[in-house]
Image (cartoon, helix red, strand yellow):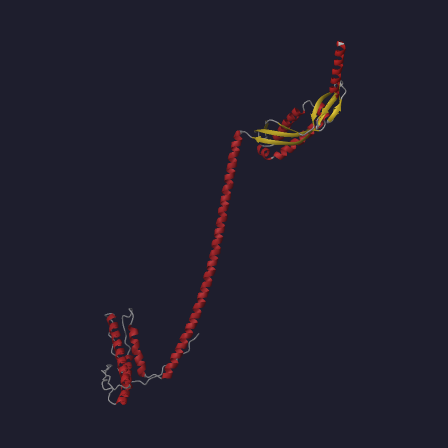
Amino acid sequence: MTAFLVVLALVALLVIVTLIKSVRVVQQQTVGIVERFGKFKTGLQPGLNLLTPFVDKVRYTIDMREQVVAFPPQGVITEDNLMVSIDSVIYFQVNDPVRATYEISNYIQAIEQLTMTTLRNIIGGMDLEQTLTSREEINEKLRYVLDEATGKWGIRVNRVELRSIDPPPSIQDSMEKQMRADRDKRAAILTAEGMRQSAVLSAEGQKQSAILTAEGDKQSRILRAEAERQARILKAQGEAQAITTVFNAIHAGKPDQGLLAYQYLQMLPSIAQGDANKLWIVPSEIGDALKGLGSAVGQVAGIAQQAEGNWEAPQIENGQVPELDTAGVGNGSGGAAVAEADNAVREAIAAAESAAVSSRSQAAPSAPAVPPPAPTQDLPPQEPPAAEPPQR
């Protein structure tokens, strides 16, 4: 009984082991390589698979997903004999698990070595500057070479990226200095360009300002000249009208010699005024003017005598007018006229004498004395010549 139980237990254990050996579960995106007696039999697809126990054996399990492998930095010599350190990353995927299993023993290590050798070949044909500025070109060349070489292994290289390209420290220092100098150069160029633009704009602004100022000055001068011309025209027209009015008034009033002599005496103080008058010349016509004035006064006195009947006309001798006796003149219009004429004559003579004394005191010592006016005969009053109309 005991031996039977032992045999039964051994049979049950054999069945369990057989079941375990004959059933195999494969994960998604994974392929199992089955060998029978050491020879490739088939590939297990994802899911539940049945095997012949103790005959079939799953030798490898291949991951069909895209894989990323980062290789350590490798020293590469450029065409200009500079050592640079390059760190690369490769993205690849297994297309044929059978060939990836039996064509290459370790495809990851093979890809790494192939990447290093291909990278040395590519970088060796470039100088440092080209290497630093041609990453896309290097990546494309490296991917093409690796994809062509790994195609027979059942592997497809999707992408190759150079993570870093590190030149030697001395080269890095030189590059930093060069970059700093280049930046300083660009900064100086930009500063000079800004100063040039500023100077050009400033000069342009000054030019426009000068043009506008000159244009404004021109317009101002034109307007001032036009205003001055209009003012002169209006002034000339006014003077012409004034002269015409005075001329017409004089001719309409028919002035006699006495009135003209009185006006002449009134102008003598104005002639003698001024600091620049060192010598005052008394014209010879002053006697005739005084005589005419005396005649005028005599006429006024005669008129008053005829009006009142008790006043005699004074006599003028050598240009001296005696005191007029207006005591007997009545309070009529004749007495008032005589008094006014007497006061006017005396004021005119006093002003003329004071002007003559002032001019003689200011004259030079060597200046000859002014001769007394020569007596002249009374001339009939003459009409002034007709004034010419003003010309525009």
